Amino acid sequence: MPELPEVEITRRRIEPLLVGRKIERVDTTADSYFFITPTRPLKRALAGRTTSALERRGKYLVAALDDGRRLLLHLGMTGQLFSSAAASVRLLSATARASLAPEEQRRFEPDAHTHLCLHFADGGEQVFFRDVRKFGKVQLIEPGEPNERIDRLGPDALEATGDLLFAASRKRKVAAKALLLDQTVLAGTGNIYADEALFLAGVRPGRRAARLTRRDCDALAEGLVRVLRRSIETGGSSISDYVAPDGSDGAYQDERRVYARTGEPCRACGTPIKRRVIAQRSSHYCPACQR
Ligand SMILES: [Zn+2]
Image 1: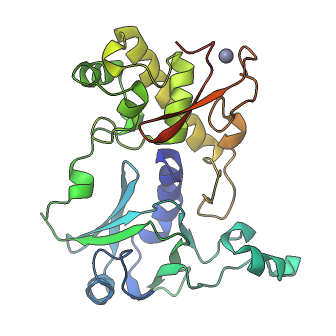
Image 2 (image 1 turned 45 degrees about the horizontal axis):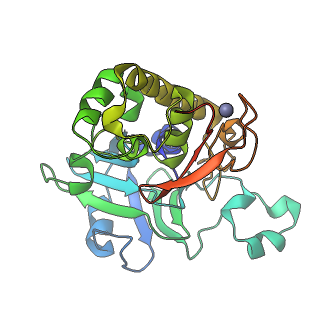
């Protein structure tokens, strides 16, 4: 599932393809829960508009349009936002992949999972929003209209501080892991980076948030910012279906210390990594390094 780094990488790569370019026409798949705004008004609203900025709020992307409306894009579990120049066989199904000669594995043509296709007036590269599992979302937000998805989000996880975590943890009965995943506390953290930050801070995911010390909170904030920045630098994690917008695979997965390494030796002490379900999510930790 794309988390903050993957969404931020997508934002950085898609921004120059959207900003300043006039949308001529929009193709979509049929109306479904993917489109919070039904496709007809969506297509009508987007045609002729120019994007003035592409921002990230937690794991959401928000395109500011020149008429004051905003377009909310959520990648969900398997969403991919990329240009028609993307080159990756990972964008295709296994069957489609197998039937391609190597020299054909280059250009992507919209398929049944390509729910949104933006054509531009300049006739250049199109922008596609493809989502195989269809947990993604597209919504048009009117000027000044409140939005339950983004209005409730806390500060960005890249801005995490020990002060903020310490204050938020005092009132909570939840586990430290759940605190990090709470999007109203910090926006953008998901399962992978929460586990990695907890390891760096030496805190077990199941420890009660209210029992975190001020020092733990400083270490957690520092660890979180560090893993998020590092993942952005290395192109994100491509565990499961995440593919960077240019079709390349992220490299961060090679640096994981605990996430999805159950039974493998801790890179610091050699103790096998444990897995435990906390707040309905798998948590991975080293029983020796984390207390
Ligand atoms: Zn260890």
